[in-house]
Amino acid sequence: MKNPLSKESPRSDVNIYETPRLVAEYLLFHYGKDEDVLPWDFGPKTALRFAQRSVSELLDPCLVPADACVLDLGCAVGRSCYELARVASRVIGIDYSQAFVDYAERIRTGVSVPYLRLNETTDETMLDAVRPAEGSAERIEFEQGDAMHLRGDLGAFDIVHAANLLCRLTHPQLLIERLPALVKPGGQLLLTTPCTWLEDFTPCGNWPDVSTREWLKIQLSEHFDLVAEKDLQFLIREHARKYQWSVALGTRWIRKTAA
Image (cartoon, rainbow, N blue to C red; front, side, top):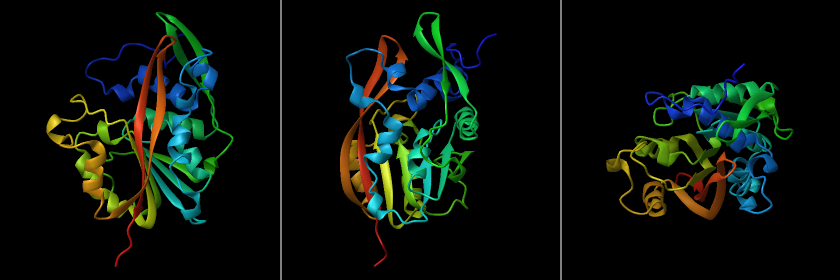
């Protein structure tokens, strides 16, 4: 029987983040063991576990209230939500891909999700995505949604986390304009982006006309203080001999309080 998450080629009319190939790739990226992602005894091992590090290396736990509510935008298949649930009483993970959300929810309920890791040509290895032991699953909920057009009753949060989302939006300015309403005064905004602006996702007229870092400072400085910056490596495996190694710009912002 063919596994539903085989590495078949996507059709050109399908959102790539709904395809079995990308779902399997992201399940490995989020839940794969280090040795499953990078089996070599060399290579950028410090780039592994990005879904956890995008939280742990940016978040200031001293500023998190005991009953914190968190929003994870562009949560993909959900691994960062467990890291966020370690410090929060409620975590909402939202992604545009219904396939990502469906698999994130299956994992949250304790289902072991099988998927195929591509090794080379038609050589594949069956792996399982398993719910992490850390982070309370009952604190997490997933829903499908558009980061550019979020539902109006979503509310405000103590932490908003958006990892590698901005440069995958058609009109990122729409999310930027919504962020002040999403983060409570004194709350934390955690952003990462590899600054990879592509017309496949974002029309060039909607790209920043300065560096992404400067654009974020210009766009956010009215409502947020930039308090931390960090370069965060990440590694996405395509097959045993091909990887995407990238360095995301990581930033932590604090929502200004009203004068």
